[in-house]
Image (cartoon, rainbow, N blue to C red; front, top):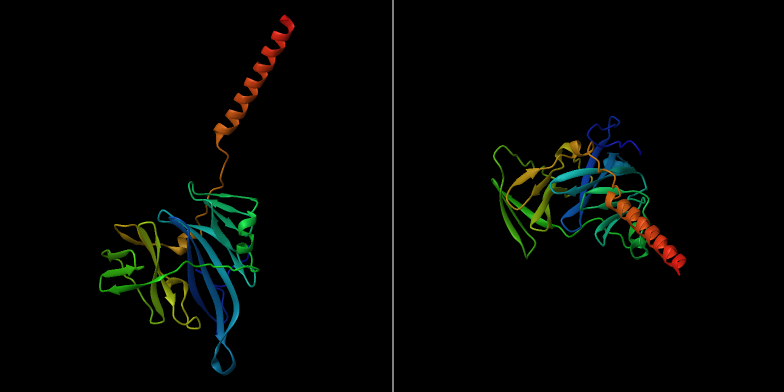
Length: 248
């Protein structure tokens, strides 16, 4: 896995700076977050020029973030929610019920074109404006609206280059900062992600999430026990049949 140039510990030249932009794709009551970054430097006539690009990928479930990995350059990780699982283009899948990661999966043919740059790929669900007025947040998608009190001790810093957006889960919402201009610096510390669980608001930590990965899914023990039971039953049945034949 490549070492990102931009992040909690950036590796930059004297005139370079980072700019981040989050994209959130919602499943059912979970989401995958792409945190895209650009290394920018003064180009011709002082106009910012991208020197390098990359992405962080995180999975969100029940108020927690899990690190899925990162990419640099032209390579990207694509993902799609399909029949209860998140399928990733690198051959992994996420089971949201655990949650846990499944390795070496076969991607269903119905979604293969959504997991490569060859198809109509979307990395973001529809988002809606979020308004911060003093210590109160207002978010609405036209059908559902929330009036959210910002907890004491929480400060929501909005750089002048950013706006607040929200995506909706089941009776919950993720609220995040989004840059208005991708060529204006927006560093790692100024990318805000908030989680509203229906009753309270809290901040999610990208830096801590990088150390938190999904466990690998394991086969349920009862399946092996069931197989053994079926085998024993089959052997007993065979023995009874042989005994009945010999008695004739």
